[in-house]
Image 1 (cartoon, helix red, strand yellow):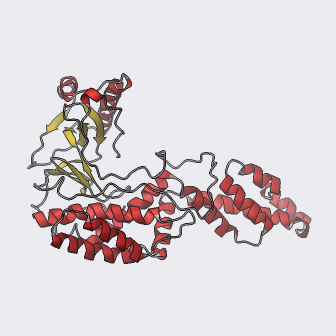
Image 2: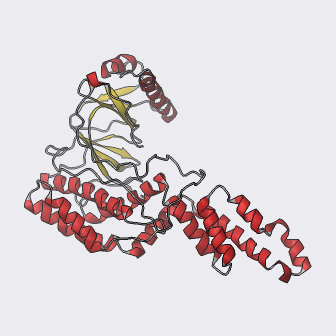
Image 3: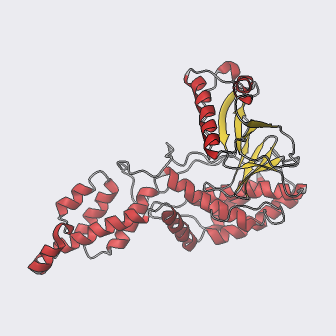
Length: 399
């Protein structure tokens, strides 16, 4: 689950924030779910998807010591936690590295419904302070909840045994003020094996560049689903980015070899098409495509109205759509209307193809769709990098 945005920080308690390598908003306003809001965009059909540049990656901000523990759900590792943040591994939104201070507890009630209620209770308590423009403190949290809820404080040190329940992080500033929170689906689990510093560096850099490269790829896909950059151009971006980092030469060479090869694979149009189709299927967007295609097909029947015998015409009943009915049904979406008017002028186009690219143009402007698409590429890159091999980190294979 993604972290809740922080409320405004007052000047007297402000902390100089540490660099976070988190994905910037893919559009101006985040959308938590796929929605059918009125489309008022006036962009040209070939306009690119514009994404902000990622924060420059810097190695060694988290790493430098062994990880403390992992979060596990259904025996799969979700994130690896360090004293100064975490590495999120395979996830619907992709891998990422986050740098922050946190206070960790594990909600331990054996009843999952009770744990979920406890999460909501904590959220409500934190938000009540924010609503008054106040910052709750860890001291106030401990006084309120440590003795009244089934929870265990997770100290920032390596754990030896699993703590069943749900990990819950409170993101804090240097004064102990709670600025955000992160409820995890998983429980606290020790690492299955000790990782070498070389493994840790490679894992951290692979998480960073899996996200970075997926971000570059998505930023160069236009709303028709075609990529507008070559593999060589992407590798030039990678080389330039690596040259800015203060890394050991062997680490630079290793990352360059691994990810320049992966760029050659994943920047091809066929892979872009497969990724888009995968996310469309996962989010059940095909239902919208089928419906629009169905409506276009029945407008075709209307065009051939005089050629259809009376009995068949009656059997079709309301399935036949007039031009006015078709336009009225989609009059809130300019993208649909553009496609309809083009189809009316040339009704010999394949309705399935018209419907697919119409709906694709809509979702290539949708935050959640773009985030999932970016996550898909990031997950693929991290898996193929080899950074997880030999670490004992068993990750989810379904994302």
